[in-house]
Length: 173
Image 1 (spheres, rainbow, N blue to C red):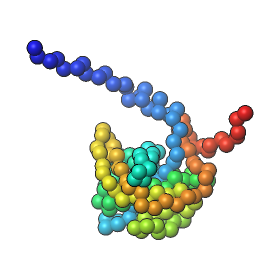
Image 2: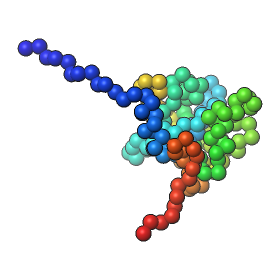
Image 3: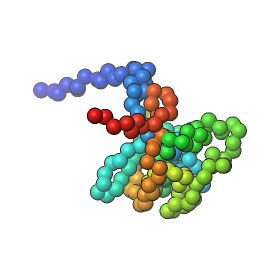
Image 4: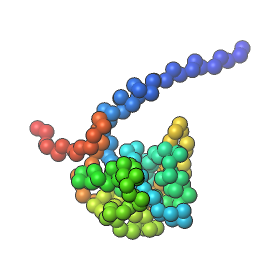
């Protein structure tokens, strides 16, 4: 007896998905890379821990973006979790100043980390060797083995409902 195919998944409409995602708070991060094809950086919100054994993280970057292409070719990247007072840094690396500033790093306090990855001042930083990538939809998932960490200011910048914010550390009773 022939097996029938499972019914096609309907999927949710793009607008409904975007509206629902606005209610998810994310840390604001800047992915930086430096290497044989140059130095670049971009603001991303899709970042998370994958494993502690071995220490591994992932970021999602639009596959057609310059930061995705540069990261893939350089083979190393750094995830900089921005502190609350760094909204201007998030805007800069999101490309909001690209028409007035030729170099996104211009005027941004950084120091060279392991493998010459730019570490943004006061950020919590995860320097990684690219382990693997996976293309899904318009984005590529970059999985990185963490080679070094640096603890920064523990008041992260978050993005929620289209706006920057900060964690409310008021204790609940």
